[in-house]
Image (cartoon, rainbow, N blue to C red; front, top):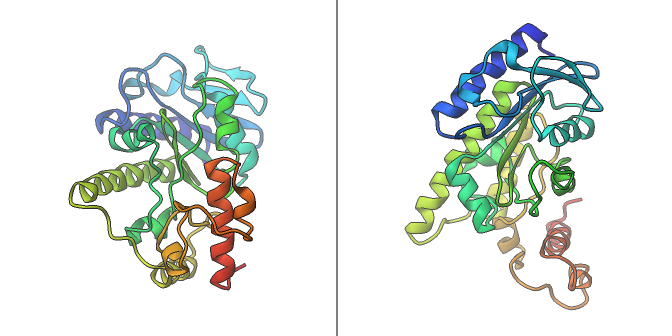
Length: 269
């Protein structure tokens, strides 16, 4: 873990980068870092991320109680603390509103197709959460189902969330999310992206493992592997399958059930 002094300096720098690149406007967004066991450094509420000073940051404990700082912590503090509790490997969290990625989130479209090898290697997939009212306990609940398997996600009608071993890694993942969203948007205007097929995706995942890319195992949300197995998460499941039993549930439940069927068909556990 980074010492508190360095963590303050790095969070201020990342705030400046987010604002400069247009990933946040006004007082949007929030950044945090785990500084030691049970203590977290987080950006304050009501302050532009482009003009923070190290002393503006707030130290809180795992229950959200302020331990140090003249300002109050961001209202999204519960989301950050939920991430740290659920993922001991995560030491930094970045939440921002990059325009193109947030556009996908507002359109209800996950960045989930296996299109760019670099994204598969670094992030796997970028799922879309259910809608949650910002600054409420609904937000942690909306990411619960994804937190164990993903280091980046779109928050429906809200923005993007990225996690990392340090604040720079979390920020770079935010750059990757927005870059992917921009490419996906261009591909859609040109007739739609051409998704990689199942074996190509599996090769990339093996490369990912050989490179020692850390993080939880990535489960595909909607990629070429489904086409290779003759199924698609966008289609209703056939009768008699586990996925069929999910009909009547949410779309996300159906997708998860189809994925389990596909993985069985591919001989994966």
